[in-house]
Image (cartoon, rainbow, N blue to C red; front, side, top):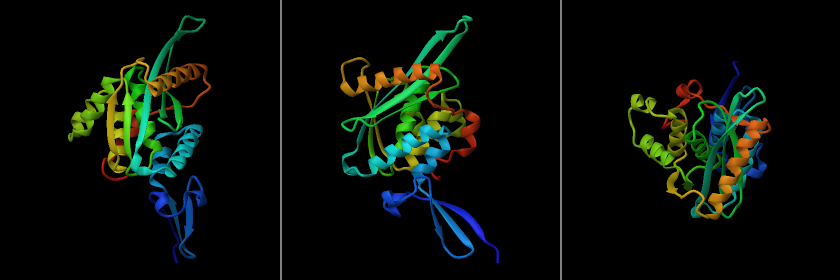
Length: 241
């Protein structure tokens, strides 16, 4: 008889209590010849789009913490990104980008570096993408950002049906992953524009995180997210996982 080894992706909290689960997977032996590895959908997404293991661990810890909350109240997440430029001793210019976010009233936060295609919008988008990675299915989420370009980009791709049009968008790889997460996680998603440096407490906290991150990336002391077109295109399906 032939044995089979295959993987099922599924939200893990519908199967087992999270405190009983291995963070990465649950293996169930169905019979002598068949093994099923049950991966939670949310953790599969984290591992798919974030390759740095320290960043994966941070997002997974936040994900499990959020499972214990009252889901009906929703989450309010303040996001920000930053880009800094510096010169080394040889007068060569270096650019570092960082993204960060913090959840209102919980003070749960995340930060990461970003590589490739320097811009002020790219880290702002990565901040929102990683926030969506950390939440569970069917959540109500309000994202606060000071970037109108980010709001326009996400609203644009959410209403866009043509793949050809999507590929013409700036930062289409990141925007495509954001759209996938919103649709396949069935997230009630809302964005609110916050004026930068206007004294909004959690927006200021997010700004501090993002600026600290860019400096850490410049020093090489923080993990980065490496998301480019070649790694995204063939792995995107907006309605299936």
